[in-house]
Image (cartoon, rainbow, N blue to C red):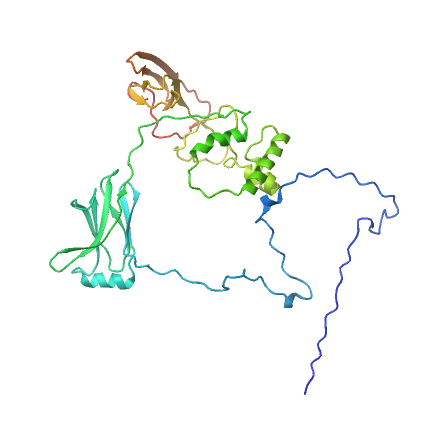
Length: 391
């Protein structure tokens, strides 16, 4: 018989230094200075920080080899990875529009179902028919797919058209057999929208967040899950405290209050900063303009647009250069135009519900003189200059 003696490692007791002690060294005999009273820190409700707890540090020290790793929560299996099935075998056919002239079809068949239909087919594979409108209309396209394929891209000629797909196969006597029928899919338009109006919204600087929330509440979709009342109250209290400390608080300061100063660099980027709370925007950009290629070194580019705007009775009809312009509920309207060099004349007309005509003719002129190497800033290609027929 052999005996094994187990020895325990010596216990290490940490030594904590109290604030009253002074480290030995230079200045140890000098009199202590009275500590300045700490300023009251801004308190964040703990409920807003739930879920942001830092990860525990790894176990180190003499007992590291006996430490247990992180365990899975109760009721969850450890280390099990289940692969999703290749198909569910529902036999359904999905049709979606990728762009104005391409459709995407996907059918949910297991490999066994696919081989079964391929064996029944005279061509030894399935066929996807595309019909315009509804089932019963003559096919506008027919695609013979690969025997192992379960999805396919299909080209169509017409945009803004309602299509239906039908999956099936031909029997030896060219008799058609339907396997699945898809729901309708509508291809989008392939032209630029004729509505070139622009709408501006100005939020007064004195408007409170509660007033903005009341204005946005009617547009919130119904049926959303109920919000956490405790979190809403805590966030409202936090915003109220910040509004008291800073009169013009914006949404850019809220993440800094909740999570500290770590996100200041992210919020400082132009894409993350919100628009100004009050007053007009400092510039009007073209959201559809292509990205400008910036050369190396010093460079400069400039361009100009024209915005026509006005107001009339909500029930009136307005045209700019002969083209109808939609009115907002309060009767205001606006329209963006390009402004190349030269003279431009545009006529703006308003007709009341009783047929009374009011008209204004505006004349614009642009002259651009360049000094040095100056480029042209990109602009929305759909904009046209003001004129008799192109507002």
